Amino acid sequence: MRKWFLMVVSLTAMIVLSRSSCGQSNGAFVEPQSTLLFGGNLLVVTPTGSFAIPKLPGSFPEISFPLPALAPGADRVASSLRLLDDSRTAECDPSRPECGAHRLPQYKSVMGVYSLRDKTWKLYGDLCFVGSAVFSPNGKKIAFKTKTRDGNSRCDYFPDSAKLMILDLETGQFTPIPDSGMVRGNAQLSWSPDGKYLAAEFTRTDTPQGQIVSIEIGSGAQKVIADGIRPSWSPKGDWIAYNIHDGKTCMLIHPDGTGAKMVLDLQRKSGGWIFYDAAVWSPNEENLLLNEEQIDGHHYDVTMLDLASGKVTTKSKDGASVLGWVAEKP
Image (cartoon, rainbow, N blue to C red; front, side):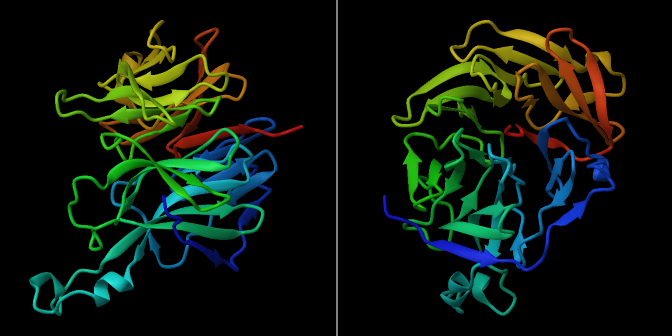
């Protein structure tokens, strides 16, 4: 697989640091000796302060809003970005209706990686779509759903362009995973702690509901684990958390598809609550952070579930969703 270009963009804007708030801005919260990633405007929160990731000038979010990811070292954040594509606009034939005076702007998609240490964005790829990101356990690679531009320079519908891709951050090399076109692009991806598998949400033509599938990185071999959505692999690798399709029930299941059990059901909450975004494991695997949405009232809570006792604690109300949790290294 040929090497894609790597573009480095330096930003002079400093990260916003708020030590007085102790991470309590925008409905965020802190956990001891931990770094948390919150969605919305991308906020990284530590016990000493909150760090707002600056927007890359000239960038736009993907329309389907794929999920960003926090690196295992808590030093980088990966996020899908769209940029104006001048090359595609220039090649547009003026005789075509879509290329006239009122033509719509053309875009390309890239994987953006922001370094919290260097305060710079690095942009990888020249693609038609970039989906939700997940870092490998060693932080050296990123997996995501993409639609490539090979043979499809204008990013029109192209049946074989959708696939899971592995990006090597050290070389900039992209490697596709075979037979992975049915992975839902804006849904959670989760990497197994041993680095050998990805848990993904598949959308199949033969069933109206999604399935949780384990995919072997090298071969692309697939195993259906459960009917459900939003997989999240536990830090020790023995469980995968997911939601059933009504969005009201959080489940755990072993990666081999056995031992499924319900750990929390939102039927307990009046007002029409569902889970959104995937569960976030604590580094010690004892707790889950769960994003909850009240459909009728448009309220958003983050709760913590103690898996041993079943105790549920509200961590934030009407704030941003939590997307990552990394323990500080000693």
